Length: 431
Image (tube, rainbow, N blue to C red):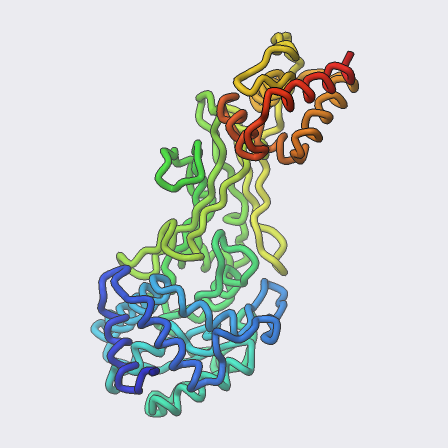
């Protein structure tokens, strides 16, 4: 059985007051189902039947996809709490009603509705913007359902990167927008703040207060693996937004120096940390906005004392262009193992091929004769392994023992007869 209206209000109270991570996912799902029943926009709807909108500054996700965001428990909790705290702080500091602008509401006005439904006559003036008329219609249903008309909420069907208030003198104490993905890709968060910050009061607050993008040097994809901070390559906050609004785009380009050290075996990880408001912070592992991006080891070049360049590009689909130092190739006089130098599995050529990949990762270059390469392909073919996958694993793994274990896992146990047949085929092809 679904929630009643009074039960929805009770759960909203828990959402706004519980410690981080202490809200039950079952309660969040119940809230989503309730809001779906009121608005007619359900998270269970196939997203193919709900259209996104392409803008000049990024993609405005579809109403159904926006509704699904509510289901991310910690994300919804911290943003709703951050908005509530910011509003309550402003109320304490101001005699006049607090003016709130919320851009990109989605169908549920997720970040504001919980506070409004649990409160009695907050001194606030609310303006809502969304690019989808379907979302505006849904929000009106929520306003009527929860009897929020006394807030005189104004709604605008508009692109938030272009919208202007009716009066040029109108300014807001709080501007809210959560229109982003991890690493500020694809969606228009940056450009919404770039435009709307001109309507922020001098002492006003943006929510989120800060989105910090950082680069790390790491030896593994697990967030608990030892990682060394390379630095912050972009930060979206009030000061950045104000600079952008004046067409100062210098923050869109940055570079980080690679420390003077041997970074063999390391790769680069990019993270997104979000300070919603005050001490309410979302970090790696909290939600989809904090998913880390790990470069494959063979896609990066980590040359000590060189720099990695970051550029925020392509406004219609925002993303970072990342340029690593050019590889300093040199032909090596290192003697690779011979083809008949075998490992635990007894397969010829594998140790030689793995060591060649290991050295290439470190900037060495080797000539490979056509006959050797084609003979090597015979091995992969008889093992029923994809050449590209084998090559990727050679670059990914740091020890030959691990590589042989991967081969064994992929192929199953290899009989002596099978190994001899593969080795014979290799010899016939190379010799």
